[in-house]
Length: 235
Image (tube, rainbow, N blue to C red; front, side):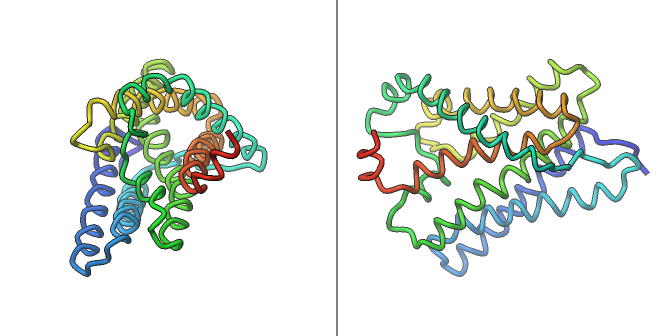
């Protein structure tokens, strides 16, 4: 039996999610599911991540990841919303300069913003972004990875886990404009990752980080789902 979590465990869990996503995406392409391929890929990623996490946790003497949620954690949603809005406004000039035709392309964001997609797909992606992704990613990055390197100190652990967290989002960027997309998308995610790591290490629980992450994704999901005409009337 292994006592605690390690960086190797993080790699295994991440690979489990990657493999699960690839398998489900392949199934979607085989059955020609069309618009559902993104949903299937996300489902495979979450199932693969949780499956490997469960297998590894059974072999740990100290396998607790701090997965504890309290009612007061819900207030952290507001912090995530404010942080997302503030950083978006801060980087707006750079985004408009690099992408005068619109926002940086991302797979899930594009699927959410596609008004031609069936409502079931868009609702599934909203649930995935606001509920499932925060839970799964916090278990992986602030659960496994952060605990594996926490002994190096709060600053080191926060910065390194945030760097890995933000770099993991490169896979969702448009490969044809990856440098420009990364310049706009990754810095805010890195800052978010530092905050999530710091909050987790201060509280000793994943609850606050999960709700901050959920609030961050919630604002982006709402902006993408709401009709453009409504957004223009509110501006």
